[in-house]
Image (cartoon, rainbow, N blue to C red; front, side, top):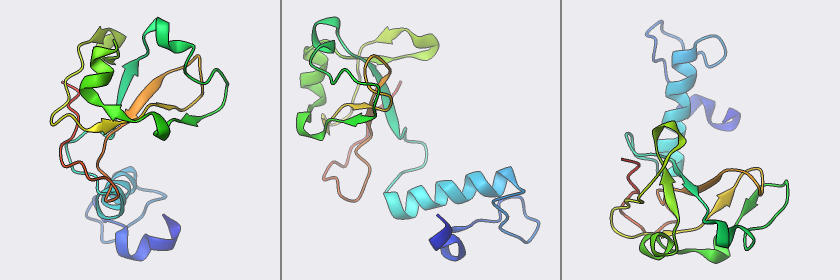
Length: 136
């Protein structure tokens, strides 16, 4: 964000300075402003949904210790749910996937497999989806 500090930094603590180094409130508000204005994020909407990978499909996921985006495997949320993928609820317990509008989603493994799996929410301007996954 350094290249866009002047246009995106926010003085959220009200001290007259947008100080992303010494003010946690300014830093968080500036990051949110950056995500909203440059990334298409909508306040109150999750940026990602953590999901469980069904055991039978874990072998299909790339088994490495490297971050892996699987955009080529994008499918509708209803197809993922039918294949047994579930959202991770509070406390880490799997729960039925609830996604508004049935958007196309692709898995993301930030540390490879085995490891956690996520679906980034389709909120970017590059996405044609207008509905956002619900984590509730």
